[in-house]
Image (cartoon, rainbow, N blue to C red; front, side, top):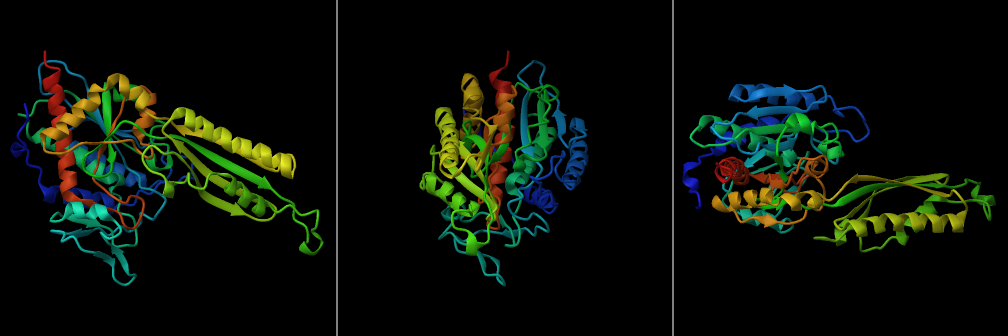
Length: 422
């Protein structure tokens, strides 16, 4: 039977206050530091959240030596049901600065351009970002155009803590044991590396790390990183004929050998790609860094072999050991681990429908902690957190979407107690 949403009252002002308090703390992670966490400043938010979880009445609040913060909301029913979890990450992306975030709150959005920074002429426009028009009349939180916002994934943290607080304050809502965890370094691909699945001790979990309202995802890319090192030979250009080997020229030829339409800006849906995201070079030596992505595992493997074959061909053409290629797998499509337990997706889907949200079930064109956790034995689909335009100055989040995500968490907890009742 469909539940009435009227009984659930999540206050917007509380969501705004909590979210703003989180995003103003710089937690940018560092892809070049192997430490856990990769930046010391992630501890600042983790320790603040630790105090907050204790204050709202959660138990077993534990911040470990690697900056993983776990806590428990005990069951309030007298029968056993599966233990479920909710997960978000503390860090923000190093793609754009997260220092000195100044969130801007826009009440009753009118559907027109939002000027983020008048002096720098930085404008968030629905003419370019069409999704904005979905949120006319709502409260939008943006940046001031000089930083990212941090809704990825501090919106998720806001929603999880707000939902736990609501359940504590409303014991008439029945639920089993709920575990939560906030992880470091998700944005640099390490969020699940030291996640203690046995300690978390749940039957399944959900990451609150999706984008627009309604998103529900249990498929993601298979992912690998490729580093191509090209060795050249520097000779005075006046005497270079037949002697110089220009590694930059070979690097350009290497990039042209890849399919020009199989790049992020020209693909969508289930289409995979090769993405050149960094290039540093001189005549003597050039390094290219690619990420390789595909939802289909066979196509993913084919992409890796394709890059390796280009290296072989180039070494045959330019000389042995001119091109060296290192490929490292990063994560895999969690669909393989979720399909056998599809009821966990169905529960989330029905929870959304019961509070008036149309589920948008689609594949992630990226990855989450949930993909790695699923392969570590913790099935972990991904639910919307509400933000848009992550990792840059145009990031924004509608407050109403965060409210709805909070309601989804509460309803999932309640549904599990209903569906697994003795």
